Amino acid sequence: MDEEWRRKAHETMSIKQKTLQQGASTSLWAALAPTLANPAESEYGRFLSDCKIVQVPPYVSDAAAAETLWQLTEGMVQQEFAW
Image (cartoon, rainbow, N blue to C red; front, side):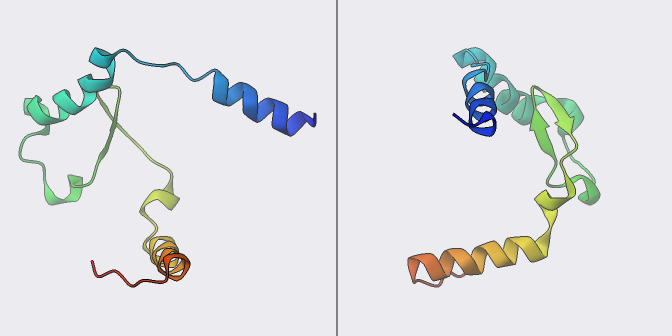
């Protein structure tokens, strides 16, 4: 086996699984936390993980990359989608 495959397999298999309660906690926190109520428009679209607001890499909000992916997907399924 090549080393890169072995490393990726190890990373994949070592993902910690959450209990049902742990998995639901961030969604519940997002819905109920007073600190998240009435955000300023600049705070829309925040990402949450483990009951915290987290910073994401710049490519996550790259509109040009999103448009490219959208067009690629439409080409693969041979259908146009309006959004």
